[in-house]
Image (cartoon, rainbow, N blue to C red; front, top):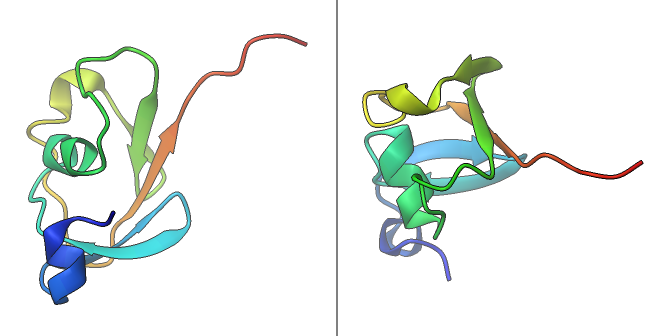
Length: 78
């Protein structure tokens, strides 16, 4: 289920892993939590507009209308 703000049409227009959505999250940390991801989990990395964002900066990383966020998880195996 999309975040409440996506249903109401309010918030920032973002692109997350290629998917367009609207969300009221002000920071990368808030966006991850709104998407049901545990920001304290070490199982993924994030980039905003093509630039890697260190985990320690997720709470401070402000989001802006039109930002493209990539959330990636490592793949093990060969």
